[in-house]
Image (cartoon, rainbow, N blue to C red; front, side, top):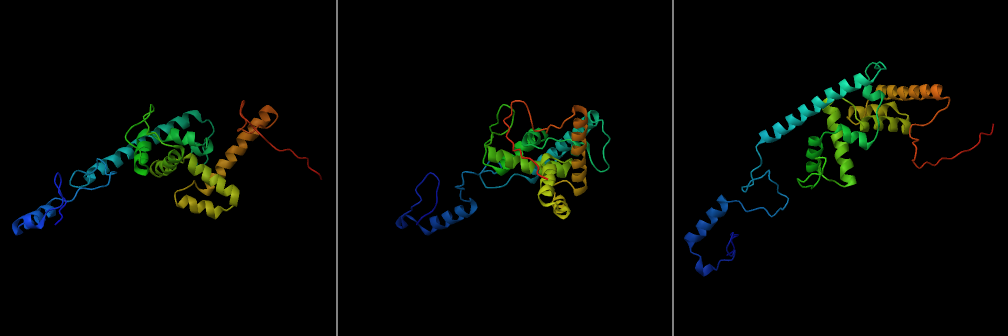
Length: 236
């Protein structure tokens, strides 16, 4: 007979096994669940396989929600203090001026939300780097920031680099209002109307710089940055 037993052989010879001992072993096995062989079982489960009380998840979610809303309010106050141009109706200052990059996305993603998503989406351990964030590879880092931006936008109502950049890129490639509108309804981009306001704000900023300097310089051109371009003449 074979019975999984901790600290003893699982093989029990039948001549040594009485009916009473057999019943006792069966009852014991029913009362004590077998231990899991999954090495990924974390601290959210005790030795009996019971999950963490739901209140833990509730309080974690509410803490992150409050932190996101507090950060959003601080961001709005900061933007209002540094933005002299009046807001367009239905368009926050964020949508009129934003660095669309993962660096900006990281700045807008709090440490707690970043780490929470890192632990949820990857197999990263509890160790953090000097900035207090979980150490991830480039692919995992971008995945965490992409999902985090969706959460930030849904909770705070403030658009993120992902949402602005997605709307502008899709509209540039497709020129489709319906596609941008669909992405907005799915929570993946800003609205078509706000995308148009953002484009207008960029055009007006470039016009002001051109009038001031006498020529136009793309914002992507920076001293010391390697740049290549193509030139051709126009034959009319």
